[in-house]
Image (cartoon, rainbow, N blue to C red; front, side, top):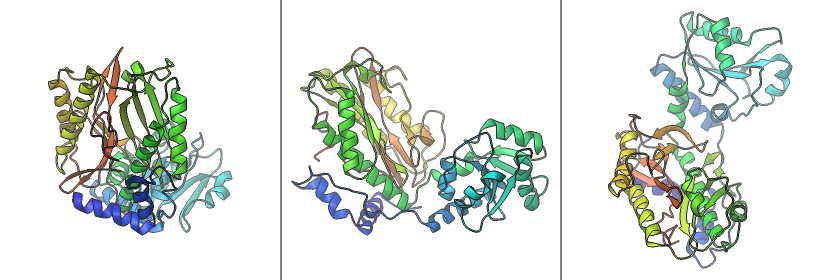
Length: 420
């Protein structure tokens, strides 16, 4: 994929227009009627068979580049990504071998064959095993038939250890390797359609937060605010959430068990998201209920500067770790260091069908960015006993930099969505 930030804006606009909700989205964000939240996913074009075929073809291409003969997946997001199929995990091995040189082959407990046949893609082979038999020999046979006894089988990163042990025991001749190079290599770089889903999901979550913040009142609970945000998501046609933390609890990056109600002068930190066609948003906003103090404003401004400077540094070819370093330096130079003392976590995580997924913007990750990769950019400063500030927006790497997803960037502590 090769496109610029200008192209990304065109992609987003074309995707929205093609799916029939551009006018609605603009009305919700830029007009006097924007308080009337409407369904924003009605008419969105879903994934189709051709999308899944392209994903499988990319997996086979990566296998060829890495001298891998097959990839074994069990029930997981990866199975859903490649085949639009969900299957609960159990002690009975059910999975699929994506082969480099033949169509996929499914491995299934025999008594589940009829149920599985309703779900697996039409025309794909299924091999079954009875309760006393080994599914691992079936997996090995699939690979041996096309690649011989020196074959390399990649194991999906979420496949459980008993499956790996079974393969090592019953198919010891197989050369097993980590499948992340294939699954991550496919999922990390998004298509234009996938980026359209993510752009819309992030916009919806930001609009839901904006709506939820209107309901803030002294004495309300975090559950009250969370319910208001969830309700706003539902009105826009999705299931979404925003987990808030009030006052000193905001210093805990993932929240505290101490219950607090909203008080004048409290920091309010909200973190959550939703999904559109299986692709997720992840947004954090930090505001103050009442008038912010100078200290609150200063810390907020430092965090926003860290986010902006990191965003400016994003280009294809730079390493994941270098982007984390840019944001961390801003925070350290402002006196909130050293290292992880106040900025307690990595700068960001990959995002797509899962809220957190490969790859990560973190020290020692020398992976180079590519156009189409998507991440969160979420610097924070956490001061236990006082408050915490985090600002999080997801972005897409473009050919000439990066583009925030969903727009509506924070510009000040009292403008969490800019001028929207």
